[in-house]
Image (cartoon, rainbow, N blue to C red; front, side, top):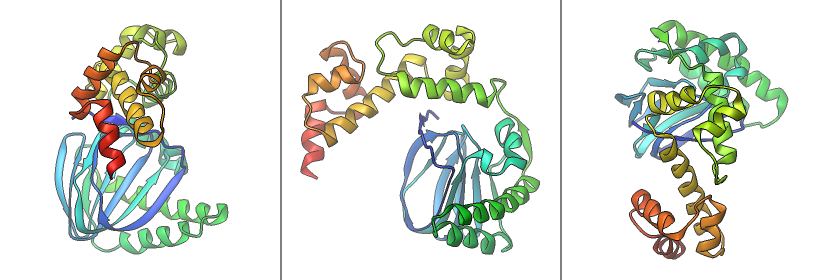
Amino acid sequence: MKGVFEKNDLRMYAKRVNGFRGFPPMFHTHAELVYVLSGEIHMTIDGCERVLRTGEISIVFPYSIHAYETAPEAKAIIIMFSPDAVPKYEKTLLTFKPDVPYCKDEGALLPILSRIVEVFSLKDTAHEDIATAYLAGVVGELLQRLTLHTDFDAGSEVIQRVLTYCSTHFTDEDISTRAVAQALFISQSYVTKIFSEKLGYGFREYINSLRIAEAKNLLKNTDLKITEIMLRCGFKNQSSFNRIFVEDCGTTPRAFREQTKEK
């Protein structure tokens, strides 16, 4: 399962949701918890599928590719957090992965998770510190219940540096595995390995996915000419831009703009 890197600078996010919106395959630097309050949510995490039901919880470790199907009747608690928000467990989250990223709660975790959402909603630094203290207890409890294995041999810190570089330089005409390797002082073969073995992408395929995502954003939210959007996103000519856009979206850039403006 391929995923697109989602850049997120928040240290923590906690919310109770009514009606669960689906997400296509993605991965990010944060860990993520989903606790089902009612209904069912179909999840896939690192290829491990599960229909999560009331009282069950999933944990997505950093850089795990995961996807959720839309579940309009489901109610859930969602918590996303940077590993450094729980420093006692930061190294574990960045070094290991669970064999099965799901478990059943017998009722002990729900009051704490609800309290995290309540405190976090107050939106100030003092209450965020309280929320992360509660969160550390939840993470510690979950890690005891899971069977862990060592993650892919490319360290998460290196993966983060590579993905961050790509997310800020994907519009560069000369971006390549060699350019990334030289900028980050790692080997070119190591960069290639990260994409092929960790993310399931060819490097160029991944860069194009970032460019198309930005093109869709500009087509939908600006009045820039399509040729200007093409150049801003790093494409050199109209034919390659159109071809890659159609392969990704099933429609041309012009048709995409017209469709999104009609909604």
